[in-house]
Amino acid sequence: MYDVLYQVVTDANRERFRLLLSGIERAPEYVEQTAGSRPLRWRRDYRHRDIHDSCKLTVICQLSDPSAYRGGDLQIFDDGIATTVPARGGFFVLLGALFWRVTPVTRGVRRSLVSWFAGPRMR
Image (cartoon, rainbow, N blue to C red; front, side, top):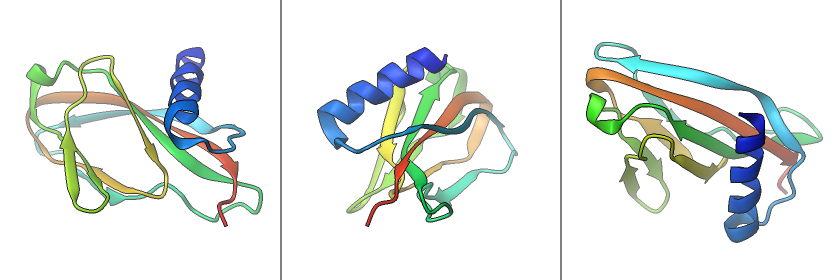
């Protein structure tokens, strides 16, 4: 999985972001959301926690088929709210400085894998 994540981020970074990256910030996190589970509220992953490296890119891999659940839309706040539902096996790469959330799941199970890529602090 790490090889796949590196390839996805390398391609996205080269084509869109052009950031200096040092690697995966921490182990990818498996996320499972069901009806009634706590929704993923607005968040942004970039922080000045470390003097050297901070999260620059967030990578979300959609593990569930979107027809297997309702709700659970990925929303990004950047000059308004954009909503997307990646296909099963699809990846969504966004800047760690952007706010994002997943709306509540109302039926079924939504599964995803979230990973964070770090690099020298933005100034």
